[in-house]
Length: 129
Image (tube, rainbow, N blue to C red; front, side, top):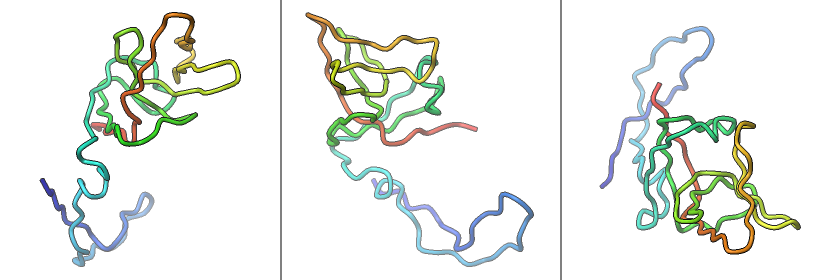
């Protein structure tokens, strides 16, 4: 469903305050802005700390697009041996691996018999402040 929100014409200052303005631009529909493939997009809540170095923290919500082709360097939702995980996809001469963005977590390297299924590509992180 469309969810248009008002948008001000002036940027917010991150330094010294500026005078407020009453001008508004046309509303922005967050679905149109953030979800180019609505039939293939879903949300997931993160549990754990393996991706903190990529700005993904425990409790964040991820916007995931299944219509995008997973490629080297993208953060993906993957199923490894029947379990879901969020990691950075690495495609190299030494094979495929999933890398955490936290040095406390080892990469997942695929060996004989292990199955990898990439469910989708993470496109946005939603945080509560």
